Image (tube, rainbow, N blue to C red; front, side):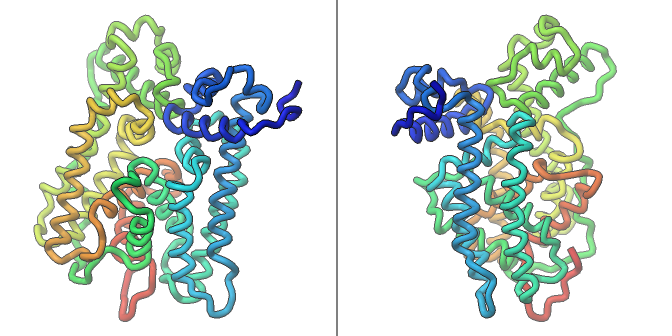
Length: 423
């Protein structure tokens, strides 16, 4: 009997359960047995509906993209004479967030899982993802051609920045603490008009980090220390690609070019390796951003201070540190006890940013109608998602830092008497 021969109402329930499990544990660690247990059915019953776990996954991914593509396309409507382009962008942001966070478990699963997918499945997804990217590119180009958006804005960069920030909301949004409508309003205001109150003064001072950025990886001379570092780097790559639950010490050894048994000379368990990676990843970010703030000469100019912090975050994330990249990829899929162990250091980094942004707002240099928590997560989300699309052959981390800072401060809309430099 094939999967297509016995329709049943439990098919949709299997998909919903699998989507939640894939989001929480990652694709590879979610077995058909676990999906069946969560759905309250026998493992063999799944085969009445699906031939394999890959088939379940692809249906979830396809449905997730179709939901969000159809929803945004419908709400923005056609580009007709007299259309309100600002309203179209606002509606697209609200619809994207609503489907991602409330209405479509499949869309959220698609966003969370993509980088952990087998290459063949990822390739089959590219066409749908390109279609959705093109929908946004067209929406933004229409607004630019109508004179709403500044002509110097690079549409591709804007779309990646905006969707990165919106998609990061799956990592932190809590419907019991925030309203999707308020979140959408804040995101629209930030991207359309920027966060600057108008009191910020631009300076000729470099926005690069004032202190050298060091990643979590330390160059050592002793062979044993180099081997330990190689194991950690290999594990960081593997955890980022497969997810923590699906990664094994044997796999870490294979990536590092070591026998699995030899890893125990340096680490007692996979959890111990993970603890080091998480600690080093967030420490690299904290130290880099803190140094950039502490060494900034112009105390009163928060735009310049925040620009230096953005640069420091991106330099650690993109240019120097495998641990930080793994940290941003896998944290939300880790077991609760592991997340709880690392929560104090993670919270300290979040509070570092919140203090910086709140001080800028209290100084009158950021708009008072922007919620600082949402601003913090929007900005860090956009920055953290750069690892998904950054290409060092096409961009430099320095250039991305400058452009991201300009987008968040100045927004994308044309301002009267504006003499902005080109992005």
